[in-house]
Amino acid sequence: MRTEIVYEDRDILICHKPPGLATQSARVGQPDAVSELKNYLGGAYLGIIHRLDQPVEGLLVFAKNKKAAGALCRQLEEGTWNKQYFALVYGRPPKKSGELADYLCKEGNMARVVPEGTPGAKKAVLQYRMRAVPDAAGCKPPGEETQTGGRPVCLDIHIDTGRFHQIRCQLAHAGMPILGDFKYGTARSLEESRRLGIFQTALCAWRISLQHPATGKTISCEICPDWIKQ
View 1 (cartoon, rainbow, N blue to C red):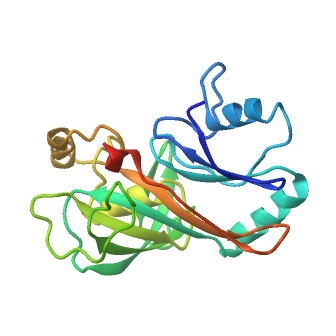
View 2 (view 1 turned 90 degrees about the horizontal axis):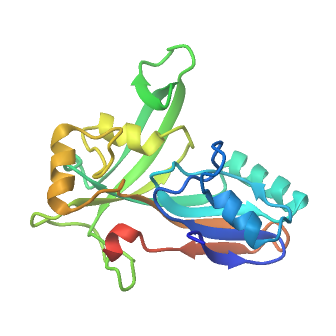
């Protein structure tokens, strides 16, 4: 099983989805995280609470019963989860920390930044903070980035909204495409990705915190992205 279970109890299951594996695929015979976990659980109930893009790795939360699913979905809708992402980007932000606020429209299998008031547009907001590239040993960034020395710029990102391809689209629009992102990258960012040996979208949902649906206690999980281990 490519999916790695990070936390599990009678109500919830949190796993690390690797890059390239779909959360749930509509194609018969194509492996996905949901199928792997259902096989692991022997066909027992598995509630899908949220998803990650196929090229993106990171933490996914599932419910193991309907009551837990309802509670987790409410938390997600109310915005009480804390989800943080690491992204290696081409280019530097204008400030060490800041906010990006855009209006996005989904067009086919891509998102596009559009003017406010565009039919179908939804507001997307994220906060970023420039960090030193995390260390694989502990994966926690030691502090704010002061200089890159030729290394990629790492952003620690928190999203206020969960729009389709939000982080990838907003960063690309801001002139900071994610390394290894063949959908939203530029010729220069992809050239740099090849030079650095980055052949997967360098975006990872590395940390998640939520309220346990049964006990009310805070559950927090962290992982280290595969592209840092490499």
